[in-house]
Length: 95
Image (cartoon, one colour):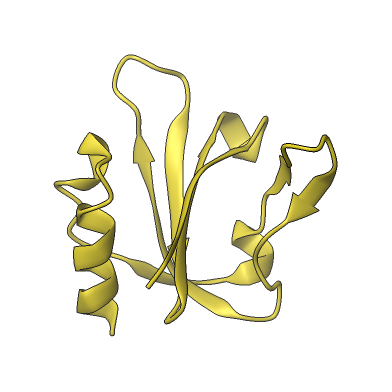
């Protein structure tokens, strides 16, 4: 499962993920960033009580980074600043 998820992440079309070689199993409450939805509401997409395969990648020439979290059903990609500040949803994909 982990290798399948890693392959899916590498093929999302985000250049920083093309060289991603590892995923860590992390608690949802640590990864569950609040984002603004298109209608202006704020929400969290992950389950605080689950574990997700995840990693964080710095964005070249930026003070932001990408965070990716995945389980057997979907992959979520966020972009955020220091300590998860100003998180925005970049992509969500069912697998």
